[in-house]
Image 1 (cartoon, rainbow, N blue to C red):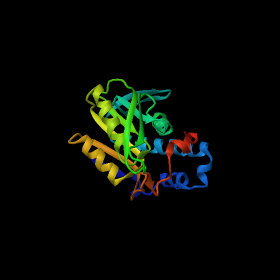
Image 2: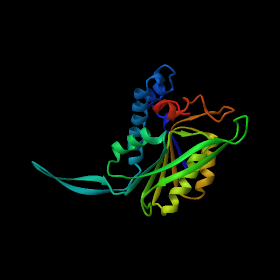
Image 3: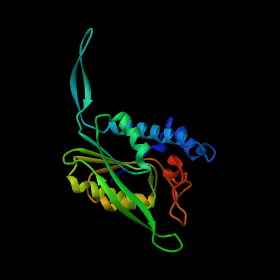
Image 4: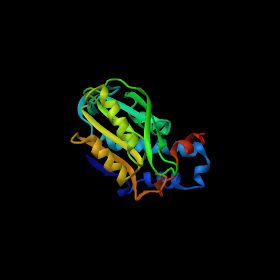
Length: 219
């Protein structure tokens, strides 16, 4: 599995990342969601460079020319609920993509809330057979949700290519995903990779719970 850490590049995305990490900026759910969407748009643009292209003849009012356009059939998949604004950013770029959704949430498996399991309940997906599958989820902490999503979507077919995108990942989570994909050709795109997690399996320094910051706290 190839890992691309976009924070190693100097770009305007670092401004978006600085804002969503800022505890004061986080007080406004709309601003936070908007930046998650913008990061999705930026990452989709970067991923577009890895697609297949062909020349398309375009007729303008004054003539004709050939323009290289992507040929991939794309399925953009996300994990409910935190992945929705990130997914929307990808759809603004890949506006002809098919879509897939899965519900996956963390469950603490011990009284101290230091061990985490992942539970999935719902999946809605077209076939990914021969298509380019994008799995986009903001947080790659333990890697359990992403690994479960990957395995679930592959039950609908064998994709031509797989790209996994997250806003923030950890080395531990990346290792879990790497084990889940095995020898498959998968590219993992991270807007940032943070040092690790706290005892409750939240990314540090991270920015907190993405779903809560986008939509408000849950019970």
